Each structure stands twice: as C-alpha cells, then as structure tokens.
Image 1 (cartoon, rainbow, N blue to C red):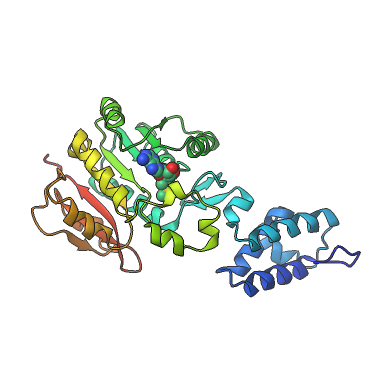
Image 2: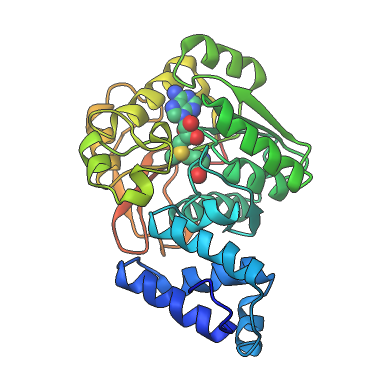
Length: 321
Ligand SMILES: C[S@@+](CC[C@H](N)C(=O)[O-])C[C@H]1O[C@@H](n2cnc3c(N)ncnc32)[C@H](O)[C@@H]1O
C-alpha cells in the first residue's frame, strides 16, 4: 500500500493486508486483516463487506500501514487494538498482560456449569493469577452478590484488571497485589475467606516450551504470565501446596485450575500426599463434553479440552459436606 495518490478501496486494503499476513504464514491472515481494517475505519465485519468500494483517505491508510507493520513483526492483534473479546466480555489488554485465551473460557464455563447444576450461589470467590481480570470479572458478573478476590503479583497486570473492572462496572472485585505463593499472603487470603470457589489459570509453560513459542508470544507477552518454572508444572504445584498448607483448599467447595498438557496427571503424582481433598481413587479423566452432573464429588478429576487433551484439574465437594 504505497503513499501515492492512487485510490485504495476497502477491497484493495483487505486483499493487500490478508496477502501480506498469509505470506508470513500468520495463523489467521484474513481475520487479522478484517480486525485491523475494522478498527481503523470503525467498521464491523459485515460493514467491511458492504463497503468494499469505499476509498480510504491517506490518514486511514497511514494508520493501517503502521498496524500492519506491527502485526508483521509478530505483535498480537489484541495488543494492536487494545481489545480482546473473551467469553461475553470486551476486555482492555496491552502488553503488560497475557491475552486471555479460549482455553480459559472453558475453565469458566465448567465452573459456571457446576454452580448452575448444584444451584450454588457462591458468596466468596478467589481468582489467583488474575491477569486481565477475565475470570474474576466474569464470575463477579455471574454472581453480583458474591465478593470476588483477584490476586496477581504484577502491578501492571492489576492495573489492566482495574481498567476492566471499571469498564464492566463491577464493584464486587477486590484486587490484591501479592505473590500467591507467599505464606503471609495465603494467611491474608484466609482472613478474607473461606472461599466457596477458587479458580486459577497460573503460569504453566516450561522454559523449553517458552523458547519454542511463536515470536508473537515470546517477544510480546509477559514471560511472568507464561512460564511456571523450569518444568511448567512447578508453579501450579507450588500454588496447590500453598493453598493446601493455608487450609484454603480444604474449605473450598469448588476448585478449578487450567494447566498444561499432562499436568493434571503429573500434579496428581507429585502432590498425592500433599493435597487435602482426597485422592481416594486414581485421578479420574473426564471428557469436557461430559455433563457436569456426572462430575465426581470429593475427589480430584481432570477434564479434557475439546481436543481431548487433559487440561483442567477440578475438585468439587458433595452438598452434604
Ligand atoms: C497465565 S496468566 C493468567 C491471566 C488470566 N487469569 C487469564 O486467564 O488470562 C498468569 C498470571 O499469573 C500472574 N502470576 C505469576 N506468578 C504469580 C504469583 N506468584 N502470584 C500471583 N500471580 C502470579 C502473572 O502476572 C499473570 O498475570
């Protein structure tokens, strides 16, 4: 897209942008092109296609050129637009925080589904490693009478979570800047609890996996949000141990964690003697599609994602307890 007086229409810039993204083998070239063009021209996807013959003025072309340049360098579209649609939330994001992923929508869906099925109205909810605040805000909106505590060790991430709380007008989320692994922080959380629900999407990528990540992840997203130790399961394991030692885990009615591939089984093995909810039987592996009313109670179970890979570790107490 040159800086000439030549006329460039929406159709032209759509083709040009998508082709450039394709040539670089970006995973979703057309979608990225639509998002950037829609952003610059304030058009929805449908409007892009109803205005294909609209010419762009130079200021629009120049803004688009700059965004395309940044995208070609690997910067995630969500950072370019400062926006990510996640579940039913429109979130502000920038490079101070992890871009919330679809996998985490499944963690939220499973958590909500169990609560709905049990007709639970949680009063206190804890979201550890909150990042953009996506889980905390979605749960705060689902349960407006509940008090949600959202913890992150990164002041930058919490600033984004604060922006998102304001954006969604949620008043029932308390943001806590703290290291969730620290015993004194766990003690502080105990004084705010006990929590009916504890959810977390902690950093769980290994150093080796991080090194192999795409440039859009490695060069742009905060490493602190991704890497969970030399072996990625180390941070989640430490989190489980901290929650167990403080007694928060024992008192929760529903625990839901997003983990890396095979981590549920690794954690079950590594932590069999530590965790307070019983491993009375071998860890049960459930497919995600399995109805939540079939989820076992008073034991840990791993849930598979839609690609049939074990990705979530859950525990739910029976009503009697
Ligand atoms: C994988 S991101 C998850 C963010 C968000 N919950 C989501 O699902 O998009 C992990 C988050 O954990 C935070 N974190 C890393 N170590 C932590 C610790 N020791 N205590 C609290 N938060 C931590 C990072 O700053 C990051 O925001």
